[in-house]
Image 1: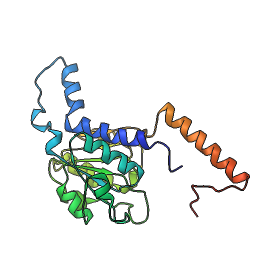
Image 2 (image 1 turned 135 degrees about the vertical axis):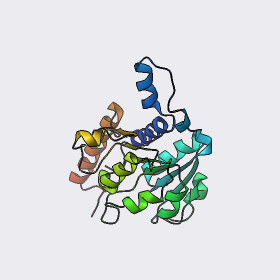
Image 3 (image 1 turned 120 degrees about the vertical axis):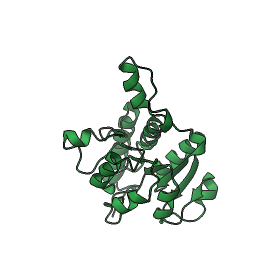
Image 4 (image 1 turned 90 degrees about the horizontal axis):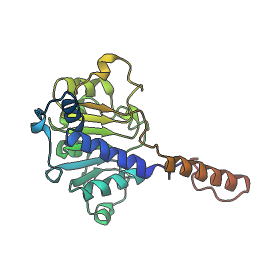
Length: 222
């Protein structure tokens, strides 16, 4: 189903981004301890000073780019399969390589499919290219980002944080993984909403009906 959940996943990626940039979870925990110290003030970022980098600019990537742009981010993307011209149509910038995007971005948001090419694509070497205060957001597929080097970087303070709706070998496997600092994890739930579920079932029924009637089917994968 290529055309359902686009809005939900884009919204979720932005929600994770805002939670990281504005340190919502640490602030929530501090307030609920009946404190008011704002210990994370130095980590709270002004969005208009940040670069939002997208890996992949398909439907969900594009929807996320538009949301990030509306919030004031400088938006860049890397997508080697996208024809020239998209940057002008959307008013965003194009990185010529993944390394360039990782080095330039304060937020890196993953929106590419899981393929032989992208499996494990974000590993130790790529993470080392990211800025020390950068945030990594993944609402695509867990196996694109290698969990061990990402969590190691978070524990060592080499990244500002990560927001993951999907993880490699999900769900989280140990209490140690769950205790990784500066980590937000949601339960592969970015696509969820009552509206999205209705859209998925309605579109599936329309496609099935077209197939049995011998009519054109718009989502063939072979």
